[in-house]
Length: 288
Image (cartoon, rainbow, N blue to C red; front, side, top):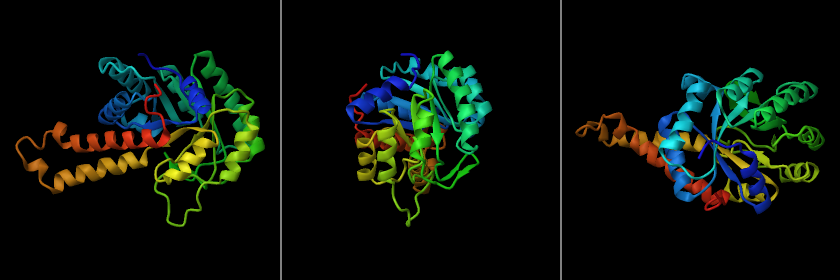
């Protein structure tokens, strides 16, 4: 199966009341773990890549080629979208040219009118190449590749203006943040989410910062139109914890235990387990 745009899988998810997991990838092991888990679960999946991760993996073309080849070599049968996460104006164009099947242009840090103008350009470009595109209104709290958001709530009317441009799915700030959630976090604003859902005409909505949000809040958000949930931090934490445990217990001192394939395997398995857990929370098992 070749890489596909994310639009169709998210429209189906919105109609049937579940969400598709967007899991960020950072290297080959992460990509393999996520693909294996989703194939086992028969779940569609969106592989998200930040521009920082793209740079770490040497470039947009490297990432696109690696993912496409892995999907083919692993005989993956579930729908897979390769999606640029929080793309800049320049980065979005590079991802489109490199063979990504879906992109997010994040103009939320611009004044709203400039965000709209730049989004129009990126929508036209993405759609001319057959890609799906996500745009953002309101900022997601925390930091993502140097873009810092205070987490303000999105204006539903601005969300409607953005949705009316013809985007395929919409990211809107509803009190969610990137990274770990603080103990005094107020929770998601379901009042804001419901207003956005009602005014934007059924467009699939995106919940960024999906790591650490209580399950009941995630599932309520899905019931209100969230069709894509982004997960990165929890996979990072699971990978780090499993790798640390392997080393602390002396796994790297065993015969050939220092081999990267053995050293990284506990983290690989931890990511797989996390993805399976999230698939069940999101309701996407057997939805491929």
